[in-house]
Length: 116
Length: 114
Image 1 (spheres, rainbow over the protein chains, first blue to last red):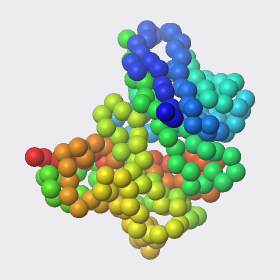
Image 2 (image 1 turned 60 degrees about the vertical axis):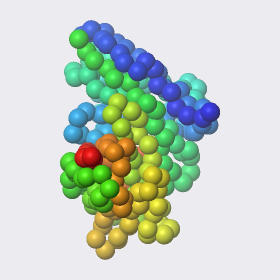
Image 3 (image 1 turned 90 degrees about the vertical axis):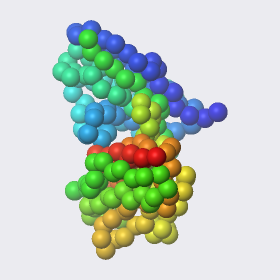
Image 4 (image 1 turned 180 degrees about the vertical axis):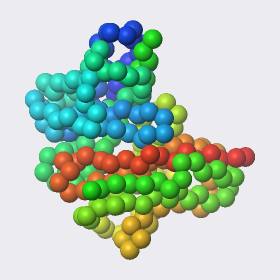
């Protein structure tokens, strides 16, 4: 059964702590993405990766970090430098490579992060 | 610059009546356009996509959308709403050279009354 998994579904963090959100895909997709969703603001791109061992900042990368050591995995770390981390985080993947235009992204179920 | 505008933040319809969710885009290039649906606390699911083939695109669950270049619009419609259609809908654009990155509208929340 192909798809994208994210864990945990809910995550609580104390101020000043780093936390890592997991994203795994078995679709054999080259490209992976992290988005942040806040009410009424749609989705905003945090980081993306077109290929293993390479990633690029999105529109709101400050306070976040990622790694892409394996094709199927793209974990996101929310650091203590992120001033307002409470949000719903979505991971996605797409075929990527040449001809990225027109390829839809497939989304995971999301992780809701709450800072206490 | 590319952008997407969803003209209504909230639409309310009665079950069995038509649905119209409006989307306008701005792009210097021929875009690919998508509609996604999101149920509460879930990920996004692709409803349909336009990639320069037929201008009338049929998607899942009875939804369809028509690409109108002259109006720069890509409105989503369904002839008869069902209670299960209540969700948030996102219009999304992708343009050449954007490294596959998508530009999302702010979403339209659809409510369906019994």
